[in-house]
Amino acid sequence: MSLAVTGATGLVGRFFVEEALARGEPVTVLTRQPPAPGFFSGPVRHLPYALGDRPDLSGHDAVIHCAFAHVPGRYRGGEGDDPEGFVRANLDGSVALFEAARVAGVRHVLFLSTRAVYGAYPPGTALSEEMPPRPDTLYGEVKARAEDTLFGLAARGFVPVALRATGVYGPAGPGQRHKWAGLFEDFRAGRPIAPRRGTELHGADLAAAARLIRQAPADAVSGRAVNLSDILLDRRDLLALVVEAEGIGSPLPPASDSPVSAMKTDRARVLGWRPGGMARLRATLPDLLSR
Image (cartoon, rainbow, N blue to C red):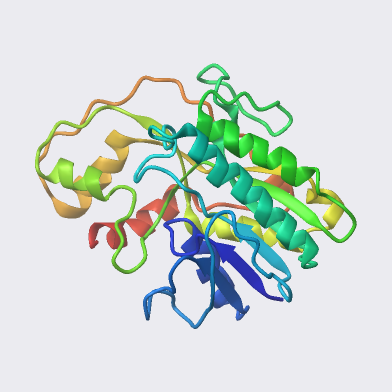
């Protein structure tokens, strides 16, 4: 088998590449520029790619589409002052890739979607894939519309799946900063930290779910969205682990009392998916603190 990953050098895309390399699977990374030497743990093939291109994906068993154009550091609100360009790049660009994959005979197309497609449900709602999307941001709307288009391409021999992922954490690639780097710096410096809690998922668990989906019978996954989420994490609890590891004396922020809509992950668990929970966060923390 051979895997192609768009946005492969991003904070999330890299996990899919590393999972495939660990299994000895050939990987093609689709990015504007070739990855720096040593960025990945093994050799990869590079194919120049920008959203809107229709690359030749012949010879690949699967494509995982992670590439997404947005204002740096922002997904919700990532359109900045150019909503039309945001839609054109991310919706039209994704559809072009989906169609190129189908024409090339790719079997699996996995689209990195988001819990933001559920946006307008009341806080505290348990979110399942059977619930219709109610995006309340342009980001969520674009992802939901791309899902619909992808599902419409489902056919014998072409298995499209949307990975509705929550916030993804984990070590960053060489020269990159992980998602909590700024938070940890502010905490160490004694700066005020706003209370917040949300759902999180380790990138390696996300990549493991993608592998199980690729191995599943087509009729169990084709044309479907799969929720992927793990722990409900309060910033206070995360930073308490930093205090425990580093012995620093900065005061912890108060716990958040805001209700959180957690995603139900029954579809993934039926496939045998078991994310690592708090134990995985604790095991990952030393690497996050060293960056």
